[in-house]
Image 1 (cartoon, one colour):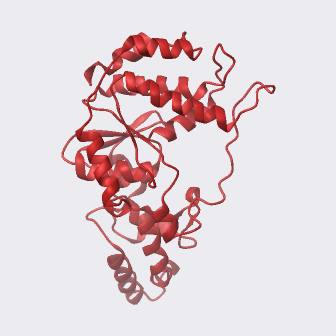
Image 2: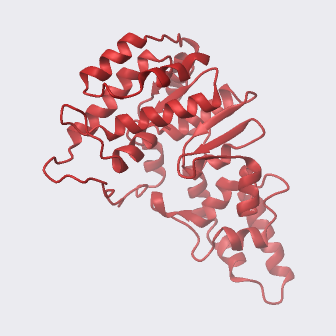
Image 3: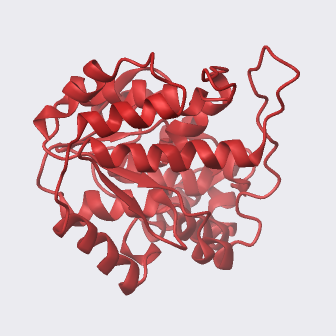
Length: 305
């Protein structure tokens, strides 16, 4: 989840190049990626860049991701202002630089990186061991016996058992649960007053995969069987349309992509020919004023590709 990783370091890392330019996003991204690749030793590394949002999701829910506050930047200097131009330059530099280490980069217009990653996990490498590198909990729905997440926030791996243990909700039902509870980070309202704990306490979301029909019918059944039914049963029944809309926005599958976008993803993977060039990498970093970056350790991490 490349732009997520870049943004994390761009916000937090105040590093400067010897040319006097902000370079925290570059330095942090490359360092983090190198350590992760060295740890996992993958056969292929896919770097998925964000394309600016999903028209499909905005068509379903116009307020999707609206009202986000700009992040507070960690900067110790005041005389060098942050700028969109510098941020864009850092991303472009990373795109160009990663061409020298043998990773497969992807930028699919008019969709989110989440959709691309979801498609790749469920349709391209569904039977192969893989790691999703992201701190976004939206990817919990993709976890299974072949899929693990590496969280940048906790600097650790997250597997299906970790999610089930923490939330009492299996990964296969995580998107459904979020559709009920909502997602404030994306400005998606849920059913008022219902959280993961209350949902998991009243419904079996571990033993098998559930859907909205099951959730509503189970609410009706439990409501009818109780003399004083909890409020959430009636809320779920009344808010079926809200939950259904949220699930359409949150669920990661082929419905989030057009046939053209799927063809581009397939073509990028099928035609991928990894090329590695250490001298070009060193020259690019030197020209950017980042000659002190440990190129040798970073480059050697990608030898398994």
